[in-house]
Image (cartoon, rainbow, N blue to C red):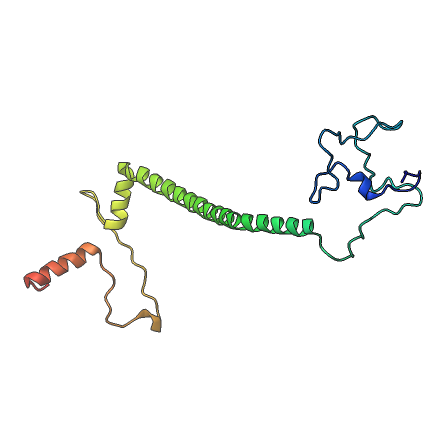
Length: 191
């Protein structure tokens, strides 16, 4: 059977040099499996393989049917799974990062408040380092005077009305008077 132009070759002729199960296509010992040279093909070469898109006139080619719309391909599913895995792997570190940023902001606020408090205390300590400030505080808080000075305490007049308290209430005394009264009462001395 000869090849005719425009017609495909028979499949059995293309498999002539292949070794297989029945031995029908095997070459005898000492014989070459290559085909004789033809004008369009050199000696010892294999026949050309036709591609699916290179079909001649009148031949049908095999094509794959397009995927129905709305279905996911395998690559799309794998890509979606990888993207979800990446998103989930970044959620926990992002949450930790945001928590640390919040804590850092709180610590900075607390640090600023402590620095302000330290500055106030340093200023107060600098005041207490001077003798003049100590004298002023002794006069105001402890009602102390220098020798030869007289102490003058100005009391506000008692308020009028029912908010004044009980009629027999005594005005507030200085701390040292209260202390001295307590010492005398402990010794049993009447005033």
